[in-house]
Image (cartoon, rainbow, N blue to C red; front, side, top):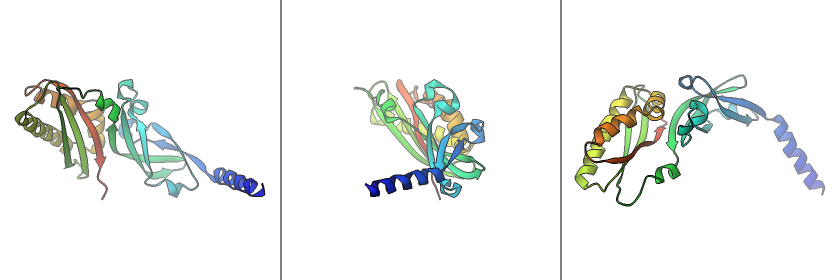
Length: 196
């Protein structure tokens, strides 16, 4: 009975020492609040990764299927300032588009952005009808060109905000690929900063 009481007291004391910090999104997202977190010391927050639904920051319900991934890189008082390190679309959302007599084409690229950061991008194209090998090869080629062209002119943050959330990259891919075969969907499924 005494041991249980001591354990409870220790747990209570640990929580009492912890402080709340507001997580701040990068400037490209208007430095909005991306959530809150607790830590005993602010130094324990560095490099902590946070996943936040894009709809909460970007204010568009249709972006609820996209998670933005932030990493805390500095502390200012009770604010944890972050940088964007990637995004991902939920697997369940993607699965809705994959049906019989369609072809799923995945394109994974490692590219340097405008700021010379290495970024890994995964794009998925789902066709409306079965695609043959020649069509798949041409789809891959066009997706690679468009994504590379866009990313070398932009930072990862700009790529995610403009290319993914505002769908500039998606629209460009659709325009170029629909000439090969009818499409069901084009998604930039994931992006991730490759840490040095």
